[in-house]
Length: 93
Image (tube, rainbow, N blue to C red; front, top):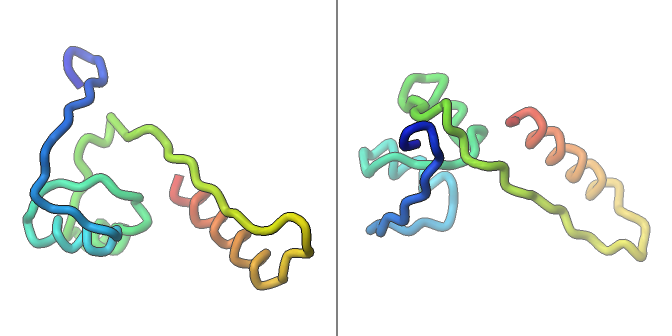
């Protein structure tokens, strides 16, 4: 934020990861700040290992989709998974 306006800044980083757990581990190791879903960091936040910064400037929400074949009946275990996933994201805000 600059003068109350959101600004985007491209930053070249030396670290590239493919998962939130590795991302969190990098932050815990002191490699910088991260932006990732809160539910991935809930334990570290609760234990005081990490702290939230820029809480007044949250990132825009990211769309999430679950894709499955629509032309056949959904297996009960898939339905349970989809419902669970929806609950996790709803609780995470």
